[in-house]
Image 1 (cartoon, rainbow, N blue to C red):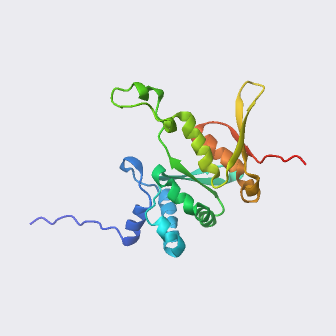
Image 2 (image 1 turned 180 degrees about the vertical axis):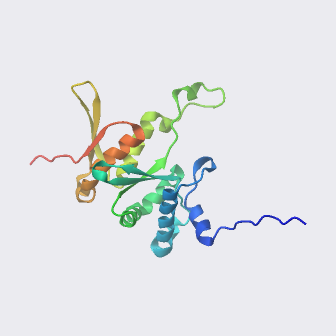
Image 3 (image 1 turned 90 degrees about the vertical axis):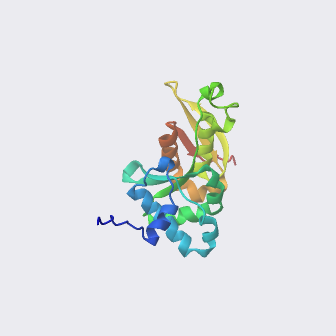
Length: 207
């Protein structure tokens, strides 16, 4: 009689960790993504006040981004439908994850789908392309995600001598102390996600 192959059972920790990251198309999470998922799981179990909000949430991806001077930032992608749930506790999550990952800046961004202009003319799809799915709208939303919970209070486009343009984004001055050291990180993250240049600043108040 043939022996049946042994079935590998996941440990409870592995099972729980797997619930904290669900990648699209059934792809497997890499080692770094699993480490982020594990830290979220640890935070959920060690902070009772966060358990209710984190219990049903999960991330869809995570990656490291190289910055100047050998530093790194962490971009965490979450399902769009869960963004509001993450926002409820985002300040605490970011603060705790930055401690766990040696002071690397952590940015949380919703996973969004950009629909091409041809969507309107598709025979398969019905209806017009939602404004929220256009390239411009998605890039605007990414800006807001990157700086959250700080609010954007103004924008200005600056044209360079070579004809190229750069977007200047002004942030709410009340958060200057909290995010002043992250402005360069915000710019690098936005560039990595959109391939567009942006400068984050605080408006200068006239005396």
